[in-house]
Every structure is written in C-alpha cells, then in structure tokens.
Length: 199
Image (cartoon, rainbow, N blue to C red; front, side, top):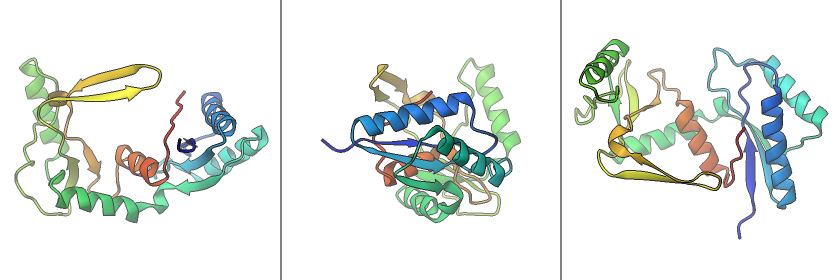
C-alpha cells in the first residue's frame, strides 16, 4: 500500500481562519497517524488578492498550532512553467483548445441556452476552429460530449455527472496564467497527493 500523502492548500488572501486551521489539523493528524506525509502548498493564483503578509500569518499560525509540514511550502505562482507545459500537452493532443470568445459573447450563449430551458453554458463555438494562441485567447478543456463521469469518494460514495452538462471550462486565462482548477489538479498529481480531506 502506498504511503498516505495529504496536503493543506491555503489561499493567502487573509489570515488563517478556524475552518482552515481545522482542515490543516485534520490533514496533518491523518498523515501522522498513517505514517504518511503532509504537504503545504500556498495557492496564490489570485495574485490580485494574495499578499506576503497573509502568507507570513498563515505560516506563523500553523507553527503556533504545532502543525509542521514534510514538504513545501510550494507556491503556485512559482509553478507557471509546469502548468504551461501541461496546457501545451493538452492543446497539442486535442484535449484543449484556444478560444477567443469575449465574456459578452459567452454570456449571450448562456442566456440563449437558459431561454431554451437548457443549462446555461458555453456552447463550444471555438472547439473545432483550430485557433492559435493569440493576445486575447484563453484555453478551454474539451470535455466529453456524451456519457457519464463517475467520481468515487470515500465518504459520499460514487457520484455520477452527465458529461453533456459539463462546460468546456477555461484552464488558462488570456494573460497566460493557469486557472486554479487546473493548477490544483496538476499540483496534486505532481506532488503525489493521494488523500484529500476538506472542511
């Protein structure tokens, strides 16, 4: 059996609150109990709101609580090259694509779907256009059109999602920065995180 590796990924947009402290404690205790590792990752992709003061306060609070970490702290803002490598691989393999739709255009697509009684979502207009990277392009993940995605959770059991209702969501902003939802998955994979306890 592989060793348990948990993580605590606070966003440095303020002080460590009681819910965050509880989540850190549960992950730390579980890793210690199972003889595993506890990884600290600072999820600072929201660069406009993240501050060094918040990072310092989080680290000081964890030390005050007696919660130490085996790996890290890692900072997502220092891992852009890793994320971009994976984004390039997704685009090159046809699993992601460039999109130049404006926010207003996407909102119009969502409103049109809603007016038809459908789930409001991006309509995939740029999926097959073969756009190249440009000044105002984002990258979207090409999600399956049909079938079901099943997520197995230790607590909730299996949960099924209809693929047709999953949006081709943005994984990289037009400024070249990876979205949080992609960065966290790449980090969990590359850091071998195999157990996630959430609040």
